[in-house]
Length: 479
Ligand code: HEM
Ligand SMILES: *[C@@H]1O[C@H](CO)[C@@H](O)[C@H](O)[C@H]1NC(C)=O
Image (tube, rainbow, N blue to C red; front, side, top):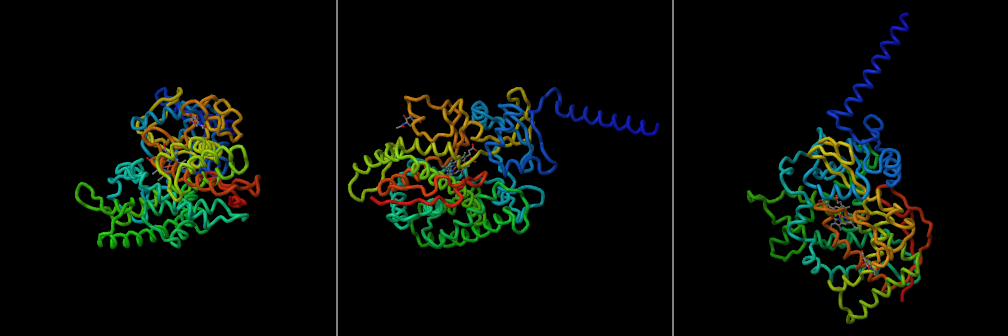
């Protein structure tokens, strides 16, 4: 009898719980997106971070809805908005429903962290200042006019580094090479730093920070997040030294054209300049955004071109025509870049096959409805290239590397299916810079070399950040 009583009360409690939780899902008739919040605390972070990203979204789109699903990742309730319609909705409603959001590990590494007591050194003034994306959008550092000035120097730095790292009939690992080239360019244009030892020290640190941006926030020795914190501290220290040196040089009146010198002289409406630590954080953010993405693209571009003589010949023909139009020793100019159409299509196809950046987060400002579901205020929204980039409905033979699929004669991918740089007002501000850096590399490498990929089946590691397991060794033949 007693047993029955207990059983009945348990059943009642259970029913109430089910009812209450149901109710909570449907507040005021609003229907939350389908999906699962996963484990307590962790949510689905493990699956998100350590599974293939396209599998994470692909599985859930199939199971719950191809338009939207809910999950909990990196400590936040998140709605993942999928497909071209989802991309369009997000990119065209940017300020109406959304504001930028960086995952907590990223906030922590870049010190903009506002969370519960986790802040190492509080910097209250920081919230009122523009983030680095605003800073680089405003003075137009990465706009075509400014980039035109960079281009010749970009060409000569790239040429020089290729010559010193690649010799005839020798094997060179492309991934470390492309990282060195990319960071050298970024240090030059963003910081005005040319010292190779300094750059070599920074490469390793930036790799650790980049991996740590999407990681579990476990700050104990040996974890990815802990390594990232140590690396971020080292970068900050190096950048503070750079800032002090630069201030000294500027005091002596040396002319400066880099972004860092602009940040040093710029003042807020009260006439106050930006504190050194904050400049260091912002420069670190900018370098991180612009470094690994470009290096990854160059690396996989070398791989795919190396595996297809047809693509190689087309790229080389295009680049040799440009080279032939120039005098001995003349550097690349803006008009040359617009002639690199096939080369850019090959680059785009590389980014489709191996997206250098999966996607980004937003925070929901105002509750909104999408595809019949309601997403509450305060939730996060995530979009990812992986909800479209290998869908056979938009890309025929999606696993095939085929730069010609973008030709006007073929049926080019529909709008919003191909968005490696995002879209709308938050679209990557470094897109043009990235295009110049990648095409300048390609121009120089096909002009001087043929190459052979040593291991065509080399494994690609890394989930959020793809990288070739052995650094992509390539055998170079000089013309
Ligand atoms: C192949 C290279 C690159 C790819 C694929 C790429 C991709 C992206 C994507 C997808 C976003 C997010 C857009 C969004 O949230 O809607 C982004 C943002 C950003 N990128 Fe890039 N990017 C590349 C290179 C660069 C470079 C070279 C720089 C700097 C010079 C840069 C600086 C930034 C910054 C500062 C943001 C944040 C913008 C914001 O929050 O408003 N990126 N990038
Ligand atoms: C490259 O792609 C664009 C579309 O993005 C297309 O209009 C053009 O025809 C393509 N060019 C070549 C040479 O493949």
